[in-house]
Each structure stands twice: as C-alpha cells, then as structure tokens.
Image (tube, rainbow, N blue to C red; front, side, top):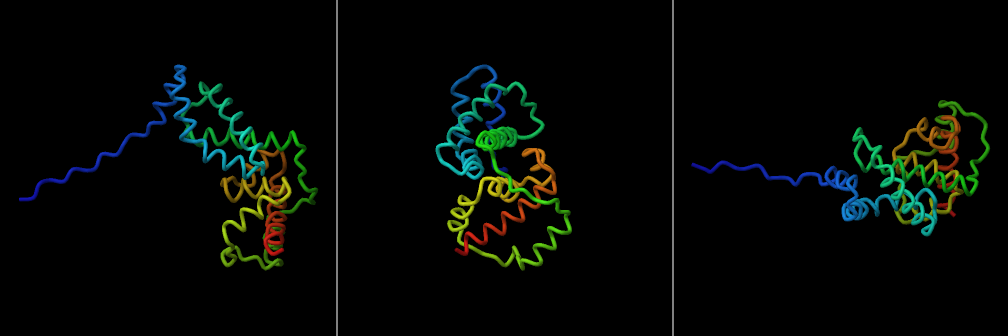
Length: 190
C-alpha cells in the first residue's frame, strides 16, 4: 500500500509580519520591505517621470511617505497595492511640480474615441513591436501622453481613476490616451 502524500508546505507571506515590525520601529523590517518592493516601484516611477535620477528621488520620497504613514495602512488591499498608490501619487506630483503639460483637447465621448481608433486603423492585437523599441518610444513621449499611457496600459488604471489622479475629466484621459497611442506609433515608425 502506498504511503499518503503530504501537501507541500508553502511559506507564509512575510509582508504582514514585516509591516507589523515596521510599526514597532524595526529598521531591519523597513529595509526588508524596501528590498522586496523597490525594483517594481522604481519601474513604476521611471515609466511615469521618464528620468532615472527623478525616478530614484520619487521612489525614496514614496518610501519615506509610506513608512511615515504606515499606521494608516488598514490592510483593505495588499501592502504592495497601497505602496503603489503612494508611488503613483508621488510621481504624478513630481510631474505637476514640473508643470505637466496635458495637451489641450476637446471633450471626446467614448464613441468618438472608439471611432478614432477605427479611422486610424489601429488593431492593437495585430500590432507587434520589439519590447525595447516600445520602451524607448514611450520614454520619448511628452510627459502628459506618457503618464496617461503608463497609468492605463502598464499600471492598469481605468480612465475614471486616471482622471481622479491627474485632476482631469474621464473624457480628457481617454483623448490623451488616444493621442498617446497615435504619437507612440509615430515615434516607433520614425
């Protein structure tokens, strides 16, 4: 008779314990949380602000904010999602301090944005580019375009959320996204 199989023991998520230790002032726990999230959060910063040095500054400020406000983390979401919101807000704040130029647009409704895609002949499923080529092209976009494109495509925010983050209307977010896609394709095809 075969011996019963034991289910593999998966390690417990260390983040809640690290957060609890941080709340008690444990510097090592802060360092461990930083190491766990720094690279991913740096990438978020870099995609939004577009410059290495600025992204590093934003990242450091975001972690200082997070550790200073850790008592406000309620656990309604994951720590990573909570931290990402702080990072996004800090990065957008950095751009605002630079006077983020959102391209002036007329108000577009959802149908006109969809129709514009049809007119442009953009079929997102058929367009395939080299990842590095796209990364470089995104970095060359104007700040306003890059931010909306990054928040929508890479960070998964919807247009209503983007509007709230950037203090613009949902329709302006949609039109910025449409224009950013056009500009991105233009930059890639240069």
